[in-house]
Image (cartoon, rainbow, N blue to C red; front, side, top):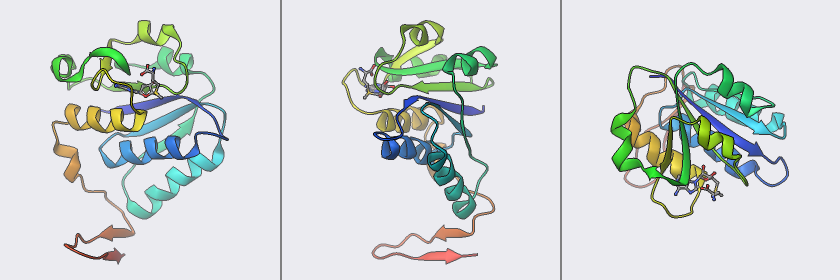
Length: 171
Ligand code: SAM
């Protein structure tokens, strides 16, 4: 299953940390790609690409003007993460493992059409919180906890886990 995340409505002045963290988190937890809509922000794309250069893997980040184009061209299933959705723990088993998955998260205001286009509207709890947390929990569930130990090929930097302190191997 290839997982692409679609992050809606990026605002260059207000959201750089949240949008960057969406990219970093989904890369770390096994997604293949993130696509941003909203305001074009090349610095955001470059910062995610830079992480790949150092820390490996094949994760891609890109910008698309219209979420509708991404959804229209998508071949696979679509999940929209929203506090109003069905509980993740109840519906995650319905999502087929042999089809690609587009996971949509919002920003300020999500158009109702997104709810309609999604095969599943899914809540990670039905409490308001954050797109970053929702993505992290959702990916961990969809990958059944396996990608938490994912290895990233072609890294030039790798952390050697320490009980206390910091150790990085430079390759
Ligand atoms: N009222 C919004 C909503 O529909 O969830 C909250 C906006 S929140 C700042 C931005 C994004 O975080 C949402 O569009 C949604 O993708 C995600 N999000 C927030 N809480 C969530 C939850 N409990 N479950 C799933 N996604 C959530």
